[in-house]
Image (cartoon, rainbow, N blue to C red; front, side, top):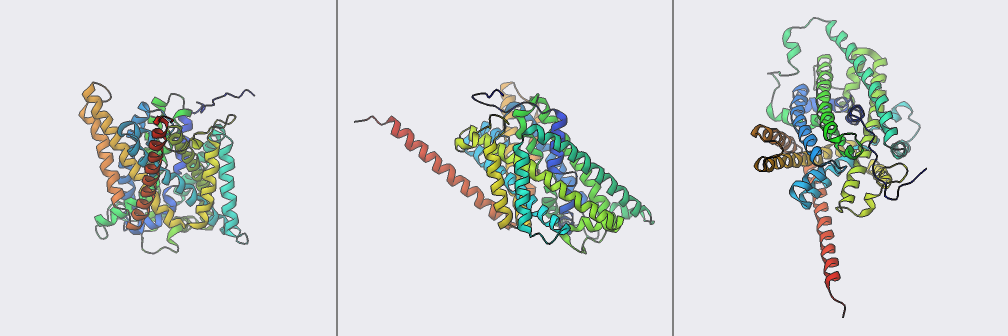
Length: 447
């Protein structure tokens, strides 16, 4: 096999591959694990929260797609913001989105380990954590084409389960007569509606869409990225929003009392059990396990490629810009994120990791929307990109919704996220100081 002296990422992914990849990273079952907590926070208005979040994510997806045309690089959000505002804002964006990508496989390992232990309790949970960390890493080391094939079959399998579960729930709901108001309460119930509660629920429901931006990290491996990244990102967001809204709507009809679940973390599994008995209970539980495996694998790929993009542009050490000559993937980054995921799974709780996810994600989403607006604004004054005021409105609306979701997060998540950003700024400052010292030393004449 011929090995290139300076290997590059291989362009093999089509629009279909990107869509399947995005669906699996987000999961067709995405709202199911968080349904119980979001339902209680939003006081039974999860459908409304999911749809509000969908608007913000669809607008942000447009910004991602448009910026991918300008910067078709694997760095994604980091590359877009750095290209518009310079190294420091770009670094903050990359550092923030990196938090999201690192935490996603961690919470997936935690959830998968707990679900697997439900099937066979004699095996300790730390053994399952080691198993899933190794599984994610080994599958991702096999290369992007293998990952694309796995994603395709996982998306199809999960889609079949979702359709079957919804059919059983519909049969359960229509087996008894209901008045018209019963079917509209999941959207708006005057007895329980509260704007602050819906805002808190939206901040949680937005987790449904986390991962759509992973698509843009594959720009250097995509055929015709200037067209396909935008199409895939927007389509995945809209498909996810529609599917998620249907899923949570059905769940709220089956179990209208949002204040009483046997277990709030696995509420959707119990709802499936009410509609379809123990068979559907175990079927949905197993499907969520498989979905979390797919999501964890996809997030690990995204983290590795964000590190690669930041390493290639010298925001991180050159170690992170390494590409394996045979598989054409940033294999060192995959191994590093696998080790970090295992360590985080042992030390962190699922709830804390999930709450921190949105801090990094929505800070980065806000900056990407701002960057898209700024690029369009400059383009209109130079006779390029956009040309209409309406084209600048979409990223501004996306920015507003993302900031609304970000502000609605609990203070604990914002505090922990602020510490992460502060550490990143400290690293950036130290690295800049070392560069200045090195440049000064090189310019100083030898005596």
